[in-house]
Image 1 (spheres, helix red, strand yellow):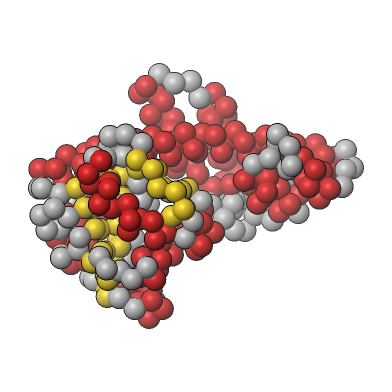
Image 2: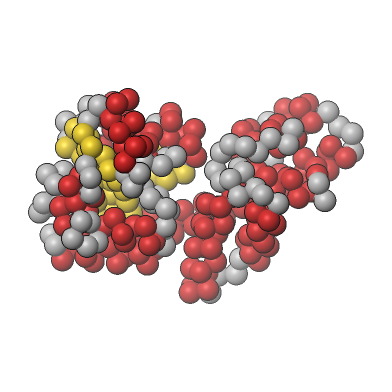
Length: 289
């Protein structure tokens, strides 16, 4: 049993913290909306803290999963922040999808305080969090990673150290870049098939056994054809992630023409009221053109 804290009980964090508790660890939680933390404690047990600092006190590992760079700084830094409560040698594992810059910034603060830091964004969506089968992409020092990995395993099916701090966030950017283009291609293919009068369930069944197969096809093609988008990974969050990708590309010189185009398509979805729709809602722009 490891004494851990979990900061941020959103769509992903709520379930991830639950898997840590189910894995036998001593879990203290903090959430900006206290009612959410109270609900979690009633469901899973554990303890509730009123500040990130209080949650981190005495913890061997502190997990965080919040919204963006600014949210991450707000829970990590300052008198009531995570670092202020951590003991020497403790580790912060950040599961937020954020910039590589903020990961490096927090790593340096942690190092100065005698703490470990791992940037560890995740992929797999809410379903992956619920089922404890997330893919976790990590950046940091090998020794720190080796200590944290057995605990991260509670909510993951794959945990990989990809390089120095920031590498986890950069890998998540690659993940989102690949997904953006894939979902647009899937949307165009499904719309084409529907307009051609094909039986799309049969089409999906056939092509999902060949080179066109993907997680998105297996899990989203049918709902896309039915025009169902009120679930899954929100467009607002995808645009946040793609903005991070485009900013990083401006820094490293990578060309992302398709990613930039799909980002604008998502802006159109937002304008149609689809801010909380699943990312597969790119289909809406084609079916309702």
